[in-house]
Amino acid sequence: MLRQRVRALRNKIRTAKQAFEVKWSKPDPKAIGHYYDKTTDQYLAAYGPIFQAVRPIDADGYIGYLAECMGIRSGMKLLDAGCGVCGVAVPLAQKTGAMIHGVTVSNAQVDHARKYITAHHLDEQVQVQAGNFESLAQLFAPDTFDAVYFMESLGYARDLKAVLKSAVAVLRPGGFIFIKDFYKKPLLKPEQKKNQQEIVYLTLKEYLYTIYDVCEVLSAAGKAGLSIEQINTPGYHADFEGGCLFEFQNPEHTAYLRAGTLPYLVAEILEIKLKKRID
Ligand SMILES: C[S@@+](CC[C@H](N)C(=O)[O-])C[C@H]1O[C@@H](n2cnc3c(N)ncnc32)[C@H](O)[C@@H]1O
Image (cartoon, rainbow, N blue to C red; front, side, top):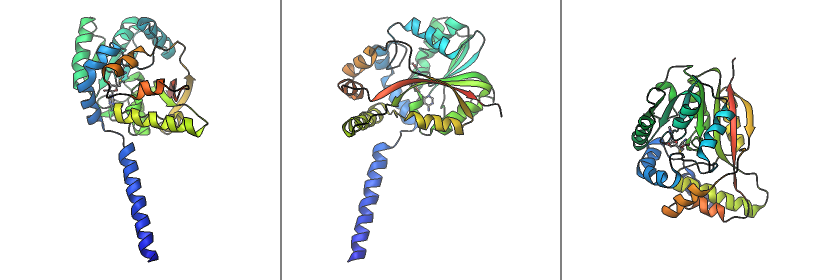
């Protein structure tokens, strides 16, 4: 009798565990590629070429701001990891004279990006290719880049340490990684935490995107051979229009507007600069 009850309880726990894992499982790069192949036109319609849910209204000023935060100079070799349609790479190359290579998992984005690069006469300075930032060493030689940046793309990593290690492999010693992303805001009340968990879940389900805890990223960075150089909150007034418009026009996405109805923020944007350690 007791043995039967223990077995039933074990089965219940296993089923609950499986349901939890299915609910929170992170999609693979192929699924993310399909998602962007299907939705890139809608993103362009709502966001313009920069697919970032938090940024200032003035796109040109924003690129100047990013160039300054990262310390980009003419001739530097940069990797845009998760480059979208090169909405950042093109104006950043134009403004700074840097050489930029973009990688995205979406073939549709590569096609858009190539046209965008050519339209700006930047074929010599900006290149783009389909590829997975989990395995950059398969695409580029070691020590190729002065910097690798992730603009609202690192949340697609299934394994943070693996992705950061992959970036470190193609970064020269002393080179840096810049990450602009959303992180869970530390909240105190159980009701707030419940709402945060709902938004985090919706973001994963609808956008396939993981909102990490910043400690997870910093811990993975340490294990990947990086040291922390700087952590900032953005130095601009954020504009939310692109994200809102996108969800109005694509109602199967709800996380952004749902988060906007709460009287407090459940996520915060941070800019993190990490340096490759010279061991
Ligand atoms: C929200 S968009 C941001 C695009 C771009 N950084 C920008 O600021 O416009 C996220 C990008 O990450 C890319 N991405 C997601 N997972 C990836 C992976 N494993 N390897 C390379 N790119 C990836 C997507 O294809 C998409 O281009």
